[in-house]
Every structure is written in C-alpha cells, then in structure tokens.
Image (cartoon, rainbow, N blue to C red; front, side):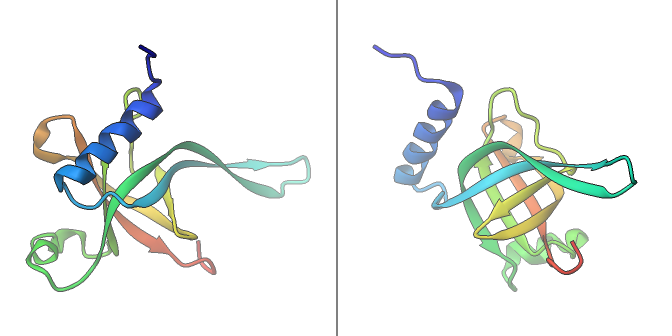
Length: 130
C-alpha cells in the first residue's frame, strides 16, 4: 500500500466524481497567485505562481436558470467547480488559467457547506486590458 500525496488524492477523487456523474470534471485549470514586483528603475514585472493544477467542471455563461439566479454576479463569464484542496484556500485574490485564458475570481463558495467542492465564479480577463 502506497500513500498518495494530497494532489494525487484530489485527482483520484475527481476521477471518481466524474464516473459518478457530478458534473464533468474534464477541464484542466490552474489556480494562480499573481504578484507584481518593481525593479530598481521602477519597472513593474508581473509573475505568476501556480498554486495547483486540477481537473474542474466548467460552464460558460448562458441564459440558464442557474445563471439567472446568479444575477448579483453579472460580471462573471464562467463557473468552475473543483474539489477542495487540502491546505489551499482559494480566494478572489487568485486567478484561474484555463484553455489559454485568464479568469479573475469574483466569488468562491463551498458547495452545500460540506467542504468537498468549491464553486468559483470567474470573469474572463481580456489580454489587452488584463
């Protein structure tokens, strides 16, 4: 018996969830912390630290009842659902990378308050303005 690390365990559970039909966690996402540093001349450099990469369920914004119920988060363009990751607290200060796009996290919610899944609403960041 080999003990799996947290990341491997989370991935194994995501695969199990996929088989059980809890959404299709078939999209790879990275949760990233952005930081900006300035050099001696005052030029800013943005760096990304990838905190984790994990499978997720992703749903684009459309006119479904779910999105009507989320009217308060009208700036969100996509919903992501991931398994919680032991030792990592996802916040609105993080960014999601998915399929070559960047998403500013606008809200993070514990699904049904059970500590098993996070539902994350994100706003796609336009590369020219982000």
